[in-house]
Amino acid sequence: MLYTRKGDDGKTKTFGCDQRISKSSAVTEALGALDEVNSYLGVVKVKAGQEKAEDLKKLTAILHQAQENLFIIQAEVAGAKKAVSEESVNELEKAVDSIEKSLSPIKTFFISGGTELAASLDFARTLARRAERRVIAVFEEGLVKVDGNTLAYLNRLSSLLYALARLSNHIYGKNEESPKY
Image (tube, rainbow, N blue to C red; front, top):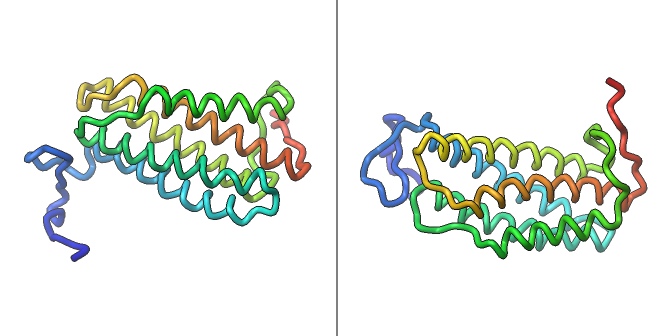
């Protein structure tokens, strides 16, 4: 059964907690933001798999691993004794470092767009940043315990998505456009 009726009163419960909390609480907002970025990474993963450039097709594995790690983070925020590993953070850093070697140095902000995949990756980056802010908020308020690797992972995830967006544009020869201010 896909429904239980238990949340009809606007309350839910998190992992290992008998107490029901409001669906509008900061914790459920953080969990929802993580769910949003995870779901949208699924959309981006499908788009990456449809690309003609082999380098971009390979993104599906990177994005899938990010989704797996986001499930771990969601479980942690919900109260499970789980956390992403330092190795997971290091893997993101290695991926970003590898991508940056093929791109020109960043000297300014860039306007989103170029390829459809790049625009999707940029949007995923903004969702990841929002999720990061929500998780930091509940952590700072003492509502949940979050491992340092989790915070680092969320910070690196948006860097990875930005690098992947730039890579998509680079592979297809799309120039990055700086804002005119």
